[in-house]
Image (tube, one colour):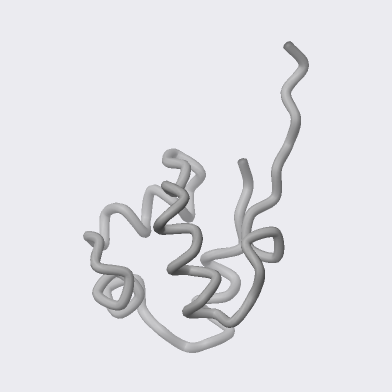
Length: 67
């Protein structure tokens, strides 16, 4: 699943550490999310959407895998 977290964070001029603190997660979690190594929990997805005043679909881009 792709996301726009890094793009949104830079638009809002906040650091990874600042976003991590606001989301109550570690900076490493934000780094992993931005690099696509970790998919956010539903709770974290809602927190991010609320923080950026966007819908979850505006932040996360679902890519269907061929199964």
